[in-house]
Image (cartoon, rainbow, N blue to C red; front, top):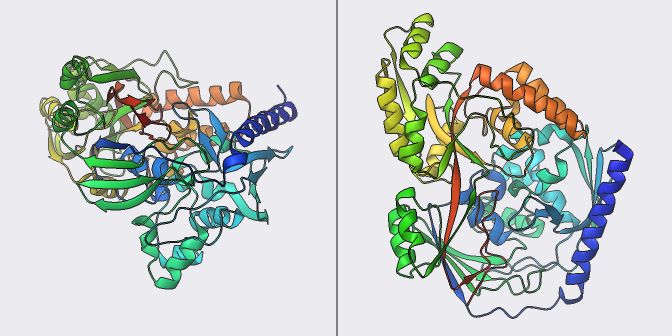
Length: 544
């Protein structure tokens, strides 16, 4: 399909989808919904670092903010990576692929809270504020509350987006500096959640700009009420939500429970109705409980060990290769994942298009590892830090055990690893700052596009964000940039396949595993879906 045809097809598809959405919602959007008097308690795995989606990158944060409080111009359909209209009813793309015009939904209300009472409905001013704040360091709110926006920089959006313009109260135009194949997919991601410009103005006048991260206001299905760190987050169902009938819970409570075994006991006792991330040892007993459903699916994820290449001797590829082949990954799969994971070889999962099938994991070989260390001038080994996550993630059910196994493997080749951990928010903050030597981390795909793996985790623009290896390799990065700026999927595939082969040769991180994702829920929970993008959503969920 040539470019003009493809653009016409994209516009036609978007318009058709928007027409369906409008026909379903426009007639009743202004009428407050009657929400069933039901409460759902979710046993979550950790405290969010904050409630401003633009600042964060983990599903712990996004479950607590993005898919409760906020919406985006375009959104992923629940349980899939398909994009559908959100706060924009439809969008148009120019013939050259560099201008996107979003036509906004009328009648959408921002939430009323104890700390903010809106005087107007959602409009173009909110969209412009949301993006200018991320793109312009001199924007007044940005200056009052300095923050980093890792996705914007990791994906190069600060260089891609030339201008965001209000055309009229319900039309916004984005001008790009170049064609961006994944632009619409990227606009459905969490960082693009729309904030209230009116609320931001109020915070500026009160001298409380930082409250945007602690007292959120959005247009989403649930209204934030309170947060007690490491204990609970409370939300009310939003009776004015613009999708009538999608809010089916009057109360949503996050019971923050960091120990997976305790979460399992709570759901068995009925103290919560949904829980996150069961550990492999608990799966059989949860499956055997007659009151619990255990949905599962192959995870769109990757657990890996990042090498900070800005720290010596990890800048030496032979050292990285030695550390990699010294790890008995199969033993980790058996002990840590306990049958709920598969060995990883690539920087993306097998279900991602453009995945290279013939990349093979290097054989576990401590003797060869010693030879590589000697070649690199480290025959006697060295000391190193090995960071282990303090929380369970869908890609790593037990980071502490994994770290201990890697520590023991490295000891055999003379490398002494000190295991380090921090509270989750601090762990990510310090890792972004590059304090670690090596660290256990991982990723669940955000949008179904290969760029979300290769660019976000390994691109030069992502060094201060999710590129925890701090690796910038021009031959690799050039391919990523080419992949972003062509709409031809076959050509993009070629670029990404070549990039994966460069990755395998340079090894800035060691892929460990892709895990199976389980979602325990009590049987009185209706329509709880496993989201392939790694978070939990409660819009559309009800209780019997």
